[in-house]
Image 1 (tube, rainbow, N blue to C red):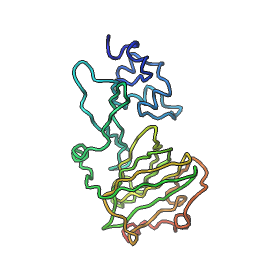
Image 2 (tube, rainbow, N blue to C red):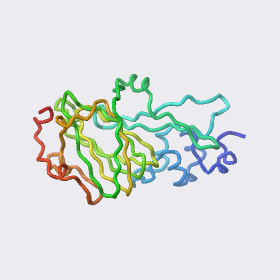
Image 3 (cartoon, helix red, strand yellow):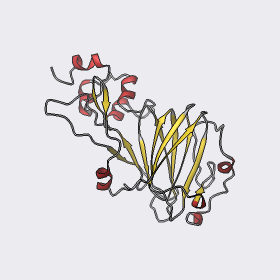
Image 4 (cartoon, helix red, strand yellow):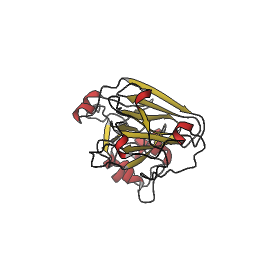
Length: 253
């Protein structure tokens, strides 16, 4: 029996196989539960078909007859210079899956930061909680690796590097416990998020320790950047709410 045959897949209820097999064997038979199990987004836009989304994954249900597949981390460039979306590459069997979430060698090969010195957890009890956008000025600039470990968040990164080709541009991502995506955020970016579910938790790996004297922020509704938020904001700190309008020359001041 071929490892990707219908008979092999259906008992597992996870049609997670190599992308070209999705295209040729399972078009039209991918359930929303299977999409979530494979680490794919469950909220597809009107202009994005299920097959289009699944093609960005390298997912195998079990090792093929050629031997076990080497675990890897999937890096996807964003339209902001130096920022990456990182996906798991799960290997499935009857127990569930195993996946690599961080690899120094893979980051080094892309000339990304690997010296991550601090980890933090942000728990948010209510949907509609907004944090950010935060950054630290030098010499405590932070590279961040961000993942949502419970619930779901609308995650926003903003390029504040004055010499960057994408300076002043922002991008949003949906990070959730279901899709297990991570965002690599370079130094010089501001970062913030809005919770989409109650009891959402965010896990950060950072290249610098927190320094209150160097902490800075961009207000969520600063007209200079016109960031769009998908839901009402119900909870925010007074510090974040009262951040002044951003001064382009203030990033390192």
